Image 1 (cartoon, rainbow, N blue to C red):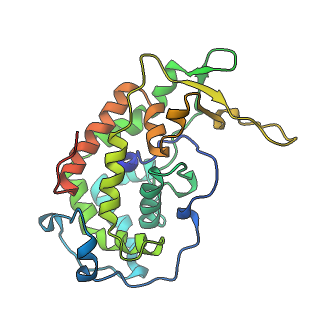
Image 2 (cartoon, rainbow, N blue to C red):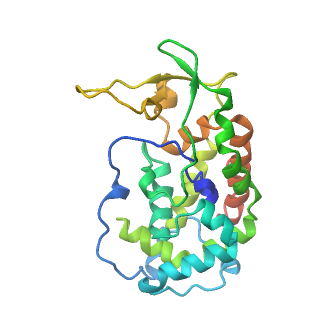
Length: 267
C-alpha cells in the first residue's frame, strides 16, 4: 500500500505541503466496531479478492500497534522500516494520507513515511522559477525502494490488515464507506496526473501576508499554471519528482491497482 503513499507514496515523498487543515486532521470519533460485511456490501465497488487475505478477522484496537509493527518488519525488513516508516499509529496515518492525496493538502504530520531529506530546490531568477535539475536526486532512494516492493506481497499484507484500515477509515468520519474503494479512486486520480510539457513546470512564490517575513521560501512555491496548481496534493507531488521517477511510481500503482480492484484500470 505504500505506493499510494509512496505506494502509496506517494505516499508523500515529501514536499512539505502547507495550507488549511483537512478533514483528516480532525479529532478521531469515539472508537466503534466496523460495520458488518453485509451492511457494507451494497456500497462496495471494488471488493478485495478473498484469496489474498490470510485473515479477515478484526484485530482488537489495543493490539493494532504491535500487529502493524510486526507486519511491517516481516514485509519490508527491519532496516527499511527504521529508515522509511512511521510505525506509530500506522493505520490512521495510512488511511488519512491516502484520503488526503486526493485533496488540496496532505499534511506531513500525518504521513506514514518519513519525509525525504533536504529541501525542494529551484533554478532561475525573477518571478518565475523552474524545478532545479538536481532536485530529483532527493527522491531516488525512496522511489527506488517503492519500485522494488513486490506488489503481490504488498496486496496480501494490505488485505490481511484490512480490518484495521477499515476501522480507521470509519473513525476518520466515513461510517459505512469501504476504504478500498477510496484507495482505488485515489490511485486512478494519481494515474491521471498530466505529463507536463517539455521542461519543468514553472513555479512562483506565494504571497506572504502579514508583517513577518517567511524564513522558509522553499515551502511557498506553487505552480504558476493555475490548472496544475488546482490538481490534488498527490498529483502535485508526482509533478515535482523527475519524469523517470514519476513513470516508475505510476507503473507500480498500475500493478497494485490490478490486485486491489476487480475492474481494470481505465488507462
